[in-house]
Every structure is written in C-alpha cells, then in structure tokens.
Image (cartoon, rainbow, N blue to C red; front, side, top):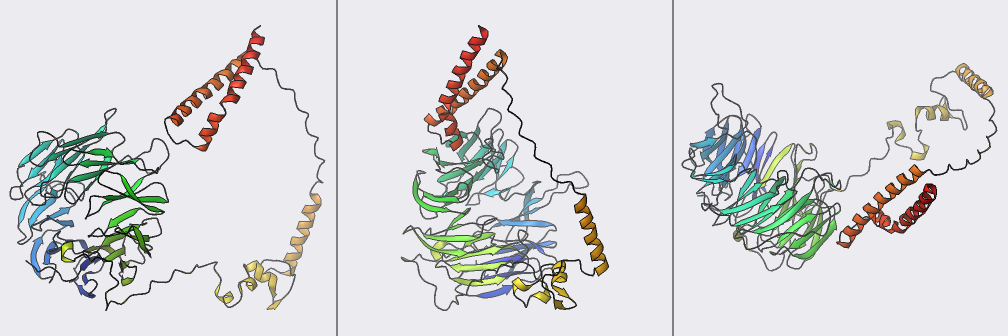
Length: 581
C-alpha cells in the first residue's frame, strides 16, 4: 500500500491532457501520458490510494502517489469511473445498448482494482452517481429495483444477499459509519403524502425512523459523516403558489435511531440552495431564500445558532476540520466567496472567484480551490487556489478543463492548529487578475486617437463634418457620396410635402357628460353578489392574518377596505328595496 502523501495533491482532466499537481506547500506538475482519445472520466479512490481514468478502449488504475500502473481494464465506451469506499473495487458505467442477440447487456460493471478482473455487473440505463452504493466496510453494495432495494456481497453479484421491499420506492441512500442505515423515499401520490423510512442494514422487519410530508416529488439526502443524522431536502418541480419558478423545497432533520425528527424552520421564503454538515460538530449550514439569500448555522436540534448574513450566495462548504466555512455564489452569480472562522463566528475575508463552477477544500483544510470548467464556460478555464487568509497561491489556466479533484486524505494527517496560520514561508503569493475594463462603445480605428467628443458617430456625421477633407461648420447632413443635384431635388420634395399638409383643425369641444343611466333591479342584485364575493375573500385573508401568516401589502389594503364595501352593500340594498316597492 502506498505511503500517505506528505502534501496535498489534485488531478485534472481536460480535452487534450490529464495531469497531477502537487499542491501547496509544494508546487510541481506531473502530466499523465496523453491518451489517443480524450479521457472521459478521472477519479481518486476515497482513501487516496488509487487514481483511475477511462480513455479510448481501456480503463487504467495507477498508484496515486507514484502514478505507477496497477491494473488495466480492457473495456471500450466507459464514461464514468468510481471506487468502493476502501478502493478494493472499481465501478464503471457505459451507455446502454441492447445486444443483437436480445440478451441483457450489463453496462454497470464491478472490477477488482488491484488485478482488473471482472466481478459482475448490472443493467442501469440512465446514469446516476449513486446507482451502486456501498457500506463503508464494503460488506454490501446496494442497487434500486422496482419496489425494492437489493444488497449484494461484492464476491457474489449474481444473487442478492438481502432485499428491502418498499412499494413505490423512487430513491434511496446508504449512510456512512460503522453501523450503516438505509433511507428509502416514496414520493407522494394523489392524496397520499410522501414517505421516508430508515432501516438498519440487515434488519428490515421494522424501520428505525419514519417521516411523512407533502410537497415532495424528489429528495436529496445529506448524511452526517458518522451516519447518525440525516437531512432530507424535499423538492417539487412546480410551485403551485406561483412564487418561485424553481418549485418548492423544504428541509427535514431525522435521527437515524428514530429518537428525534422535525422540519427545519427557515425564516425566509424561497428555495433552499445548499446544505452542508460540519465534519467536526453535529451542526449544519443552510443557504436559503430568494436572492439575496441568507446563510445560517443550525445545531443538532435544528435550532438556529448564528446568522451568516444575507448576500447573493448559493453554496456552502466546511473545511475538513470544520474550522473555516466558505459561503459562495456560483452559477449565474458573481463568484464571490466569503470565508468565516467558525470558532470566532467572524468573517475572515472575501474572495473574488468570478466564473468559477466548482469549489472544494484541500484535505489539510488550509487551501480552497475554485475552478472554471467546460462545458458551462468555454473560456477562461483554469484552476485557482487560495490560502484561507485570502491570499492567491496558485493560478493555472487550462484550455477546456472538464474535471478537477483533490486527492482524498484523512484530516488527522494535517493537525488543526489553535489559531489560523498565515501563508507558510516559501509560497509565492500571486496578485489577483485586475478586473476587466469596460469595453465601452465601439470606435473605428481612424477615430481611436481622437477625443470621444470629436469623433464622428456615423457615416452621415462624417459627411456633415468634412467636405473634401475640410471641416465645414453647420454643413447639412447628407448621405455619403451624394451630389449637389441630388441634395437639391431632395430639398424640393420636402418643401412640396410640407405645402400639401392640411392646417391643424380646431380641436373639437369636449362632449358634454351624459347622465348616468338609472340602476335597474337586476344590476343592483348583480352588484350585491359581486361585493359579497369580495367580502368572502376579505374574511379568508383576515383568517390567514389572524393565524400568523405574512400577507402582502395589497392583501392588507383589501382587508382595510371592508367598511367601504359594507357601506356600498347597504346603499344598494336600500336602493333595491325602493325599486322593489
């Protein structure tokens, strides 16, 4: 087994190259042999022992420290590579294609990482990162089938060792930790609420925890690293209230032992953008609400602990020690990152990572990487690394960069210091790139040496200002190349059109106001019915207000208009009585 690294390391995959960098405090690059075809996948094992990549008609497994070859798997068309938790097995996925003989062609395959020998496979038509899930001890791997989750022993993938049957199961998640649990989600159907159940792996007779909720078509699972607690982010594709284009979302907290569960109460309306557990403590951070979004810390009872402020942010990441917290705004946001000291609950600094689409902490917890990846952005692709003090220590542009990943390592190998340390000596601190200067209005080459005010704005402007190279103040604006005869004819036509225009007619006197038609008995009844409908709406709004719901300004104004409507109904009723008489 390879010795653990003395420094951090990351690997990257681009269109024309792959490589490994020894990250700060070291800074050296090692380029992997360029494959004949562009690599489709690149992945470290979870323990940092192996590095695997798929290119062309083979998958290669190498020692992550020395890059020495370990195994070669002859398999064409592989587009995704993953490892089991201990790095014993390699899992590959390729696009499904039905064999000509009509047999079930396996496209989700399991291989031995050390030898490259095949262990078995499954049919999995659509790619998903969690298609095959493992327990941390690698005793079982699990896959979802219609109405059940099957658990297999890695050495016998042809038959399930355990089966958990849950009707309507749409997704599941196996927890980390020494005593693994499995959570199964059943979406809502008609009037039946959505259901989530947790079981201890191997003990499926009775669930350890259960929760029902509405407005849940799909969920994301966020396990604590010990597997003792679970956060469930529920989502719908459509917001029936019309408040959000992205649907509705809610967050629920469940203890794996079934001793506690609740909905996480958020004090701001809008979507939930990101959730992250602290690796050191039983607390978590949430970014939520319409933009500018709010970020907050919650304890293990789902109670708010600290407000991290309101800003255009949609991502949150703890460093491996849980001491520093990054709150960032990526995607269609500006790319700003705020770094917080969790111990002091104070902001350390802000970083400008414009254009970034990936954010990840190094295993030592001291360096933060942001990368701009294709195909989201085809320009300015590259990798930047900051020390948690805000100093930029590495910047590497890479054309058409598709993927980058830190080499995993246990945080215990990089002891946490009592105080946040400055940038280590010997590391060159780079100056951030200056902000792009606004381009401004386009100016043709011949006008770029003149002040903007003196530059002609169009070809007609040029003709107005210059005749045979000499400026003529007050010259008429004419098309370029027009002769004096053409200009004279155009002027005569204009004068002729002006003579033919009729003089402005005298404005007609305003019409005298017509007397209002008397209100009939039918019209009075219709109007009373309309007003009574408004009163019913006002009563419903008042009930919501009394129940504590937050109403809009126009809804509150509608409630205040009740006396006027009552008065109008009384007047119409009196008029109706007189008409009936």
